[in-house]
Image (cartoon, rainbow over all chains, first blue to last red; front, side, top):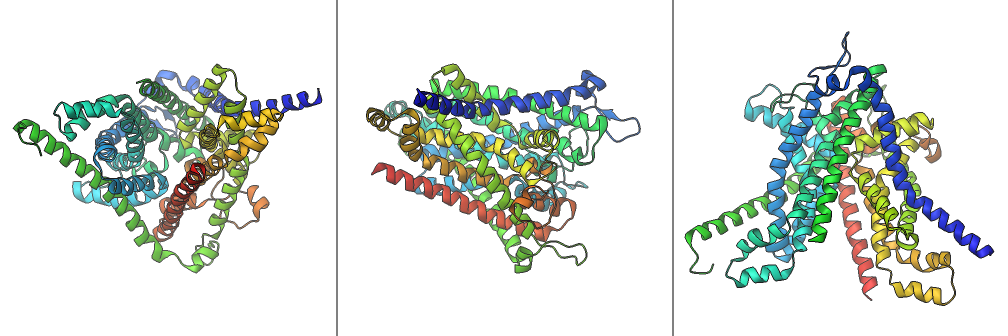
Length: 287
Length: 286
């Protein structure tokens, strides 16, 4: 009897530990909703989401976050357009065509890329990329959307390469053998048979990249100039993440609440992306 | 190349090969450039004085000892909490849970956590730990925020290694009359040490590189404290210090020195993760 009670107690402890992750997600969701709703109500949802001017410290403050939303979307799209082809082709080569030694070396290099702290990317971006853009394109300031796009493209590369490799390696050998036996060359087999067979996994890799890019704050803050303009390639811009980070330390009142609302918008984006990621991962597992 | 292939096919093959080669060369070149550039700029800036003193506005001295200590404290504090929480959750999922729906919910929650950007962790950490639980801006609040962030990592690595503990071990222990808890304590937990260690190494790497989540929870101070005193006061970790020195103070020399240190540490962590994985794999195969 006593032993049974003890076992039940242990069971309860582990159940509690198991539920902690769920508790954390609920905590984050509830906190963001509670602190994000008041400002949206005061400003008005439409004015908040589609207002084109953010002037939080002006005499008559304006809180329109359309510039941030569009910058985040354009920046992410740019990073995907630049990073996905490179990451995808690297993954195909490493998973299918590379000699074992080359594969080991490049795979290690990619995991180094994944481990580099984002502030280091920001620092190198500030001192190499930003002056580089200024002198190549003859613009007054290189701290721009373009700089952020390049930094983000590099930062999402490891996720794209690693997830794509996993997907490509899971393609059954028989598919490739059949294609080779029918007279296709190895390279044709990789791109016409292996890649289509692994498409759900590769889609998951892209979605994961989107999530990484839209959530990155520090590196982007260091290279994007951080002015609340509507997005344009060579202009200083502010992302959803950097909008929160840059004003939080000195904000108060409605301005502070509006920052929480921005975080709520960002969180909704992330939840959508997570759902898409899960969808693709599940489909690639079933395939 | 085989003969009898049409020109169009040959061109396609050549094009794809060249594109693959270019991409790999670009990726590898990028890594090589980043590592050598940071090392070349940063290593000459590292001096004994930098590593062993604290910054002082009076003498204009810049030292990063407090930041190093803060980083160590925050890693220790976060690991103390995250190991039992993450490993415990994994044990529940793998050994106790019978309800498939609950397992799915917990796993979905863990995946959601691993996708949330660090700036949101920082914000919620600030609201919950610093304001609601009244910890103020402190290393402890920062560490607890990082605990939530790294929970999915430790959970996943432990879960993966639990799956490799042979079912027959558990059955053998049950057959000898052991209770559930005894089986877990003596058979299951020792079998998943490798997963917990791997999870810890990955977490250390992530904590070392984290900055956005710490900005508003742990703060920017550069004072030297003991461990427990340190946890209750604000302090910058190496990454936060790098950000402040580079962005707000324009001290690029110090920033590169910190970047070089971080680069060396991340390389070491990667090596450690690889060696641990290899060691345990070899031991398991015996």
